Length: 237
Image 1 (tube, helix red, strand yellow):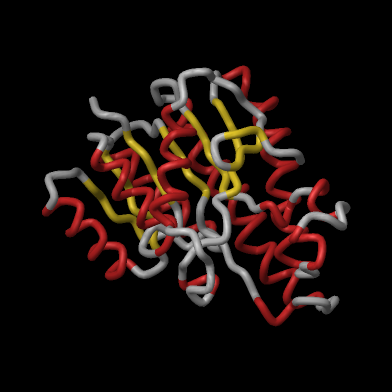
Image 2 (cartoon, rainbow, N blue to C red):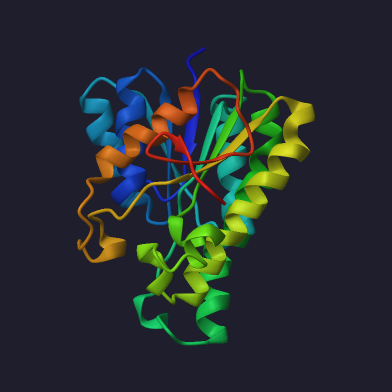
């Protein structure tokens, strides 16, 4: 059976680019999307190009939604080889502000959503062949970047987003150790500042360029785990 990959938040931006590139490598992709119709449009494009794709309605903040998606994947494939925790939110209005509601909203998706998806998909990953998890993080979540006045992100004071990605990094380290007994590789990656809806199309980097790095990490044969990558190099936590 072909490798099976689930990407959350895959109806647009980086997630869409990841599933399209994976499909071109003959990997069956599962498009996790809050809006099933948007996800179906991505799937239709992949299928038209000769790839294999399935859409699942997946809201990472809703346990029933994630559980239903997991059940659908089990019925269709019985396993999962790759999980990319890509779904995320960024609120530009939070810069320089301490706001509990914004932090709660950001963590609901970026942190608790990621943990929820990983937990509920874990039984399927255990059935996979050489299973891998990639968590989409950010250089903004690097303590090295936050504490270095010479780093461009030192001036970026997005409390909710930056701290949520720092949490993603910590979760990656610990999950890699926890899941080592199941031979599941877990890594994080900084995709860079991209031209997507999330950045209001202000980023200089194409999501497809970043998606190539994510695919590289998924298919890497070294089995390095619990590591943070950027531009295919190890990045400081």
